[in-house]
Amino acid sequence: MYHFGDNYVSIGFVVHLNYKNPWISPFDEFQRFKTHPSIRGYLEGGKRIAYGARAITEGGSQSLPQLYFPGGVLLGCSAGMVNVPRIKGSHNAVKSGVLAAEAAFEAISAGRGGDELVSYETAYQTSSIAKELWNVRNFKPLWSKFGTIPGLVLGGLDATIATLLGGWSPWGTLKHGKSDSASTGLAKDHKQIAYPKPDGVLSFDKLSSVFLSATNHDENQPAHLKLTDPSIPISVNLPKYGEPARLFCPAGVYEVLYDEQGENPKFQINFQNCVHCKTCDIKDPSQNINWTTPQGGDGPNYPNM
Ligand code: SF4
View 1 (cartoon, helix red, strand yellow):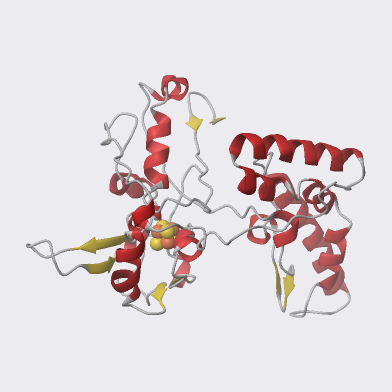
View 2 (cartoon, rainbow, N blue to C red):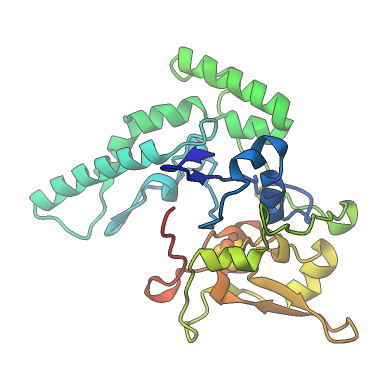
């Protein structure tokens, strides 16, 4: 929760996408969080003015891809430069922008263009960002493996040792476990969650929230949410996982519709609601959904975020 100018508050809630219970709805967890006695006092009497959602890349050092490609580079969160224990990445995004700009300036000054800015990645490797991410590299693997309390204690200990000893850790460099999609358990093995109905004061429904994201898509846009196999949502995901796309999408894009007899389920994609958080691409247990860049800059238009 952050101050956000006079009498404004900006509040976020992180749900780690390697959760097992397919009945979890990150959106509804957030609504519930806002009603917590420690939080509600800040919100009561206020007015909801904006809404958005985003997947955070939490893999850190071990998950960083190559940072350059012909004609472009990956910066900040698009590369995965968030410091997970600090839940902070804007400083690294700014710094990576500076490094990339310096590399681009050098290339343009030498008459180059449209090629690969290898020197950006070289500069990254000796930068404060690389050092900072290296010291906390085991935080997320330990957290995922041991759960919140023991994981945070071990992760904190590891990060402290690494910071004091120039990056050395008794664990070396831990790998991440299963992918977020593969971590999803079977519906039959988990309890369904009955989330409270939105009260319209502190908690709200998805559709009125999405309205505040001012998301917009051309009705005739080429589909930007693509299914590799259109039959999988109903033939595999529904019986095995309860089709969790209905729940993990924070914008109500995916629905399973039934006929009047409550039979013949159909999978519907309300693409116009999409806020481009990319969760579906990451969490779909069958890895059947591909989020692609929408045409013409369509998508959310966050006025204050
Ligand atoms: S469809 Fe996918 S990318 Fe769009 S809001 Fe839902 S989960 Fe996010």
